[in-house]
Length: 133
Image (cartoon, rainbow, N blue to C red; front, side, top):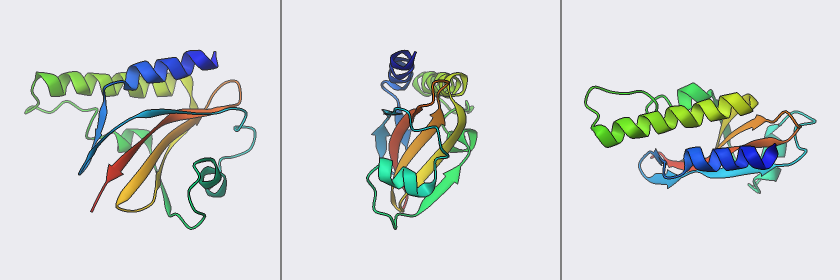
């Protein structure tokens, strides 16, 4: 079940780039048996090996992808295909994970973790980076 999910996430995020002031690919995140207790900020910072004073902001999944997963009139074919790929990625996350949250760690150079719980008690999702100055 779990390998299946990481595979699905790899397939649906492959070739997609998160647009910000820079473009970063997505990586699959998998933390086995970590969903027994709530994912606190402290725990997230430990799992991601960020320093304890790293600021964390939490946003909703749909809000985070609001600019990527919506077709705009001015999109060309490639952009339209990307929109569909983002929609598929979001659906894959929602179909396979519960309690999904988007965690933004840091400022300017922001590490983004989109994490939810698997049915088998693991934490899984994808990570990327955004640059906002």
